[in-house]
Length: 179
Image (cartoon, rainbow, N blue to C red; front, side):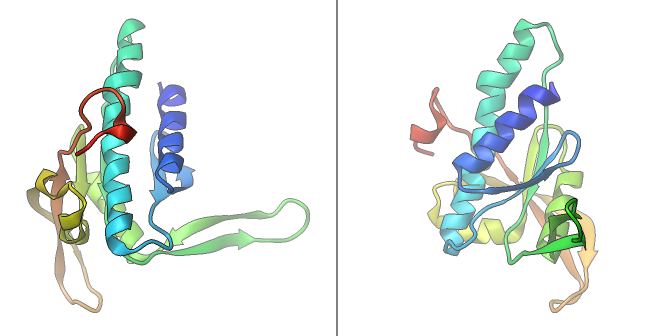
């Protein structure tokens, strides 16, 4: 099932102009919106999430059902802000032992949201909700709950708020549909 689903998700990341960083067993870490304005970047993230849901419902799970296999359910976490990409590890010789990875509070928060998300739940942070007003997806962000994750930085003692993204494409062709 992972061999069927992960490659599909990687293609969806690329379809929406995202950057695939890595897969973590049965998960994917990707970034969207580099060089874009805030609203465009948030639209890319929400379009991506809606398309993943669409691909599961219309391609992956129907195939698994045909094969009498368990269906896939996923959870996701996303937030928005500046993320720095750093090269981790040594770079020497012909076989460099390093890779690029995200280093930021934003990446950590997205990871925490994914951990808090339930089965088939797509949690996004409050910054995505704020910027979603002009994307067509704002009506599909339902307040979920405050999480038990707090962080201490410039804003001191902030509790992470979570919003469940319930948006879905209708019909059969995700990229050509209105929200």
